[in-house]
Image (cartoon, rainbow, N blue to C red; front, side, top):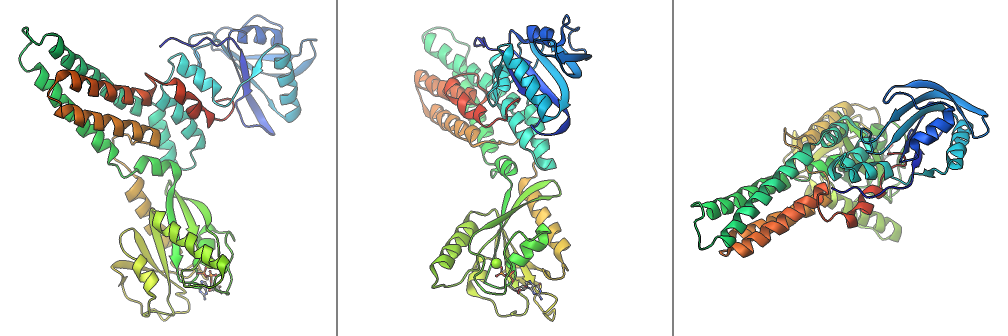
Length: 446
Ligand SMILES: Nc1nc2c(ncn2[C@@H]2O[C@H](COP(=O)(O)OP(=O)(O)O)[C@@H](O)[C@H]2O)c(=O)[nH]1
Ligand SMILES: [Mg+2]
């Protein structure tokens, strides 16, 4: 791909802003080498070797001492001339270095601009660029592993392989058009149509993953549901280990959805406390109930909390929530006698006490097991973004249509549509309009 001209030399503090032992700076562009020479007052160091240097401003006033590295193009992260500086991580040091770089005509980088330049120079594809953002955002081990695999090129290889095979099928179909009346090796056209079916099948299998990769990026949504006063908020607080939600003996206190983010055995879980489900007159509480019901509907998993003291009596609303994708949690075990059934609504009962903490570990193990069952994948790389899903859905639809076309001209056009859709995922075609969307969510300095 032709690299877009990048006349500006950009810089950013790539490490987080604030007080730290060391701050890492990145400079990229044609003036990066000159900027380093001016800062150090010396010739450029040998490529890719760290050198200790005093960094000084234009008047020769020393600002700090740190490591400097020189990565001449094209063997650098962006593919341009790149300089890396390691300074001390104080605010005043950062301000002084920023001032010195601005004084040399360098421009502060925009969010994602380094990765965008790396993409423009063919250093990474769009799935890898997205994976850098994911790796930066990863909060749990499973998220890190998924982002790492994608950054390592697992999705790029999968999608690029599909695109290559699509282009081959397209070439075969076009050969059928051009040589319709001549000698074409027997079966070229039917082989191409068979390839369309195989490709569509592989893409459909990749799409039918239950949103595993996307959920792993976002976190598994778990809703705590049940009647008022059964101890839902107390349970959330016990699990969170801090008073995140309002706990009160007045029914109907929790009126909004309150969330805590958990790391369960490496899997990200967003646990949401909700308002008790019941018929209400009060408008605010009714809104809380409405939100609770909406969350119940959209959650990946539901913890249906029941009051152990009330058993075996069960309210119809809670009973209706039990079933596929839910866990039956009997709370207030410390008060109840212990004669609850083994299963309720077909779900095994997890007896806990939010007050004493009894049974909470078992509940977390069960929750982690459910999270793993939903989020853990096999060897195949998972689809991680709605953007990829849309493009692949478009591609499979075109392929299924192409399979049905008796005319090679029309089949070839369908394959072209499919190849273009897959190419958009990695950024091999039609990308300009998507670049802003993708790089917008990056941090500065990435
Ligand atoms: N003894 C005992 N009381 C509890 C337990 N869980 C909650 N409670 C009490 O039950 C009342 C309602 O709790 P809350 O968490 O606000 O219930 P929610 O309406 O379902 O959110 C409060 O007085 C809590 O202290 C428990 O496991 N044991
Ligand atoms: Mg509550």
